[in-house]
Image 1 (spheres, protein in one colour):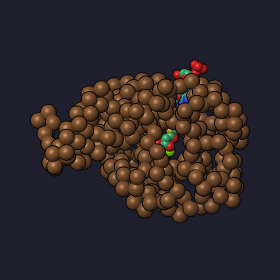
Image 2 (cartoon, rainbow, N blue to C red; image 1 turned 180 degrees about the vertical axis):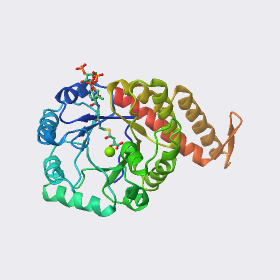
Image 3 (cartoon, rainbow, N blue to C red; image 1 turned 60 degrees about the vertical axis):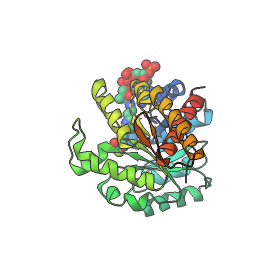
Length: 290
Ligand SMILES: CC(C)(COP(=O)(O)OP(=O)(O)OC[C@H]1O[C@@H](n2cnc3c(N)ncnc32)[C@H](O)[C@@H]1OP(=O)(O)O)[C@@H](O)C(=O)NCCC(=O)NCCSC(=O)C[C@H](O)C(=O)O
Ligand SMILES: [Mg+2]
């Protein structure tokens, strides 16, 4: 499933059991919201979280923010009821946690279909298990899949990787998932940054994620939104450069040339296509903010 170009620079998690967070999110500038029934919710609060999420999305008021609900896995006591509950909610996607295989997506889709969900309801997966990493090339081909969210906390635990500033132990899985996403036309979001006091480290992680090819970053607190939106938006310089490339390339084409030099750099068709994407993203962000 290919989604239309939509900014997904910032995707904020909130525990479904936290009514204040569900309320607050209606005013926050995040592009997407993940209303969580899974790991941010204690077992005793699962039923309450489900009820509050139903109430919140039914009431609405989230404007242009994309609403995605993260359900519990089908191997838990709550997974099936979660899927039955979200099947008919007015949401933009369902996020499946800890996906290990394509067959697990099939099982979730079967539940959603039984419960009357539209065949158009986008499915997202968390890439956060060692087995899921090894199977990501196959998982990413699922026809209902819209996007991948990196679960770097669970993955670090499974791989016994330390959270270092350069994320050295994460680079292979992160890039593997970016490759799988791009090969299948999917969106992909980087994992969360857990230290809420470390702004410098957070900015560096956002920059690294952008440079690695991610569309945006998942977040745990409202104070992480603005900087994320800024880093994952094309800058003024990016937009000017894209316009120059497009103009130069179109003129070159008219003159039957296959290459042209812009500001001392070689420009080919691939740069033209990337420049069109940058301008389309900038327009989508403008529209999102209007
Ligand atoms: C980390 C927190 C528990 C901190 O909460 P709190 O102590 O309430 O923070 P503040 O007092 O600084 O909050 C200021 C105001 O902002 C609202 N708020 C806080 N967090 C959120 C949020 N996530 N969404 C919406 N609104 C939020 C507070 O209500 C305050 O509002 P106001 O009343 O107007 O002052 C908390 O931030 C939190 O719970 N964060 C989310 C944690 C979470 O969802 N974790 C699970 C996802 S991470 C994960 O599982 C990734 C993956 O699976 C993996 O494996 O990597
Ligand atoms: Mg996780």
